[in-house]
Amino acid sequence: MRIHANPVSTALMHPTRRALYLALLGADEHTTVQLQKIVNVDRYNLYHHLQKLADLGLIINHRDEGRARWWCVLQRVPLPNDGHTMNNDGNEIQIDLSSPLAQAKAKRLIAEMQEWISEKVELENYSLESIKFTGRKL
Image 1 (cartoon, rainbow, N blue to C red):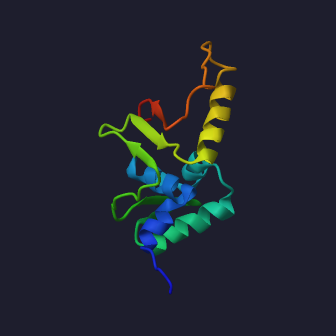
Image 2 (cartoon, rainbow, N blue to C red; image 1 turned 180 degrees about the vertical axis):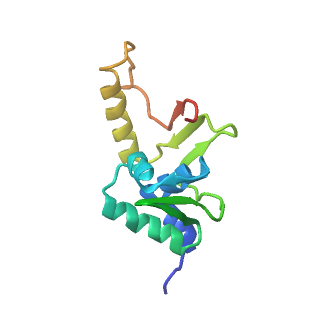
C-alpha cells in the first residue's frame, strides 16, 4: 500500500524550499540573486527548488529585467508543521527537541555558543524539551 502526501506540504517540508517560500512571503518580490543570498545554495539548486515551488503554483517568476529574474508568491498556503512553532507576532520560534538526536545536537550548539557569550549554561542535569529563539523579523 502506498501513502500519498499532499505535494504542497511535502515540498514545503524541505528546508531550502521552505526558506525560499518564507522569504518571498516576507517581501513583495525578490530577485534570484537576493534569494540565493538568503538561502545560501548554489545557483543550480536554487533554480531546482524555485521551479518546484513554481510547478506547484506557489510562486511565479513574474518579470525579467535584463538578466534579473523577479519572483513573488502566487498562492499563500499554511506551512506544514515541522516541529517548530512560532508565536503570533513572529518574533519567537520554539523548536521541539523530543528526539535524543535533537537534544544532543542542541547541547552541542549551546556548548559552542558559550564560547561567544559571557554566561555559562549548565545542562548536565537537564533533559531538553525545546529551545526558544527570540528576535525580530528583518
